[in-house]
Image (cartoon, rainbow, N blue to C red; front, side, top):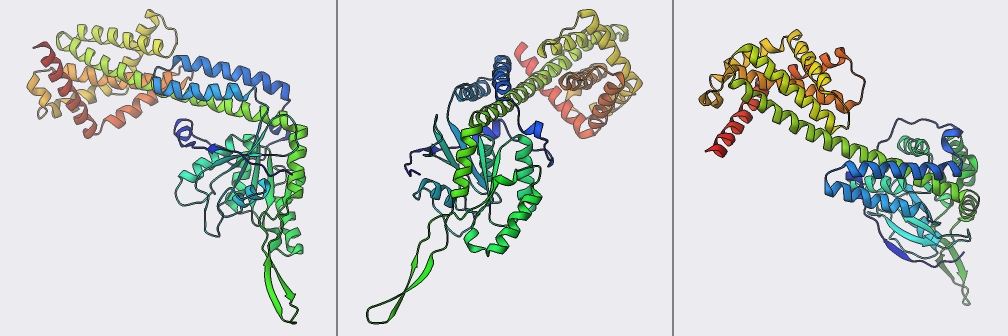
Length: 463
């Protein structure tokens, strides 16, 4: 095995953590069908997933978010055509991950120490083994359970990008290690579980631990993928007799015990390397689509809130100049219908003017049924007496209409963002929730303060 090395560079995925994030479900033993799918189908899925992501990016208005996601998209487009493999060494702090990297490469490239969590950031290296085709990259990761969450986040981000995962343990599985293995198995990561520091364990005890590992990971990791290693064996104490018949004791370094692991890496990459690479790229493409969907969801929701806020002031302005109750109602319904239409346009959902008008009337009826109109009118009437808004001479009807517009608009926005079918009962629950939330006087005072600020700004712009 060659020991050549090229340091490609330190990875810093903290940015991607903030942008994409990682969600892990409860441990589940995946079925064989979940763990492996045909490589040909994966290639088709990758192209489809990347096309979906690209379409989503066109809808995102934020330049910063769009550019960041597009950079990830371009990386995955190149990766889908690559012949390289990424092998990531992962595990708890001080399990011997960096020692394993050093041993595989044949020279020390990372610092090791008996202290807890020596490696603080990920690093990428080339690994020269006879697998043919592209280059094999080895990635060292910070240990889990290190001080602070930054290292754990980076380690999981790097692991999520692996074609092949090497999970290093120094004994029987802890509950946290078992949970990690289950999570990565569910995510579809092919994993080699290695028991390190085998030289420090009695052979009989080592076999007991290996059997326990096989039993506990049954259905998650193949028994042939659970391997004993010694990445950095303890030096051997040797006594030499000198010519003068005295004895000299020295310590001699021992070679790493890695052959089972190296053979398994070569076998996997030779037989299944193409599938592993495509599977990993597809997983990352799915994560990118989810990140783009989440970015678009947040952006649309913020824009929707701005529409609701604009419409609540429009409702207040319309009602304040139309003191007749019948005219008030018509004005409010018309503005609510326009608000609904704008929200549908924002979410690329078609709705006719007549449908928007009927929906606006339905929202008004629901508010009446819930007693929202009466409650808002009474609450605002008592608070307006001491509010700066009273100094502006705004009628109580206008304040009530604006407040109800906000409740109706936010309730409808929540429903539209959820993507669920229309259900009057569900909408009633949403409205009831907002009425309860906004029934607190602190929220009402905050609303009145915002209104006062809005009116003063409006008056200033006209003067």
